[in-house]
Amino acid sequence: MALIVALGSNLGDKLANLLLAKKMLCHQFTFVGESKIYCSAAVDHEDQPDFYNQVLEFLSPSDSPEELMALILTIEEKLGRVRDPLRPRGPRIIDIDIVFFDLQKIETPFITLPHPRWHERSFVVKPLEELPFAEVLRHQGLLPVGKLSNQAFPIK
Image (cartoon, rainbow, N blue to C red; front, side, top):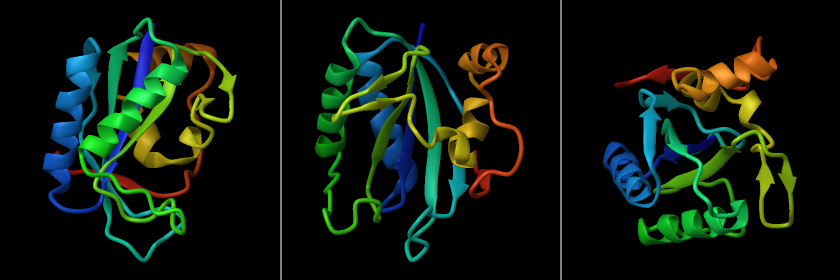
């Protein structure tokens, strides 16, 4: 049972932002593994700095997906994330997305799982392929094959 979380940062010390987010998440959940850190261009709004991205795997907690999302939003806020309603996908210190909560399919006004665009983005797919949960996705035929919306390159 797995909780898969994608991290992204394109403001400030991007590497430090990812490391601090990971540290805060590790205080909340049982850590299983991490991908390399990747660099990718911003999607949807190209007029912003490149992102550093990483995907983390944790054991599934007993919390509901809604409780997890509320906790993640709190962590983002503590790390300095400010949401601009006029530019929701604009530059940000940290972005933390729940990509998978096991293989549950959930759609509420608060959360959609799996993340609706995970399979289109190399900055999620490439790092995810490095984690143990990728074998579950391969077995289910869920790992995408073909051209993704952007390229991501490992930096570490």
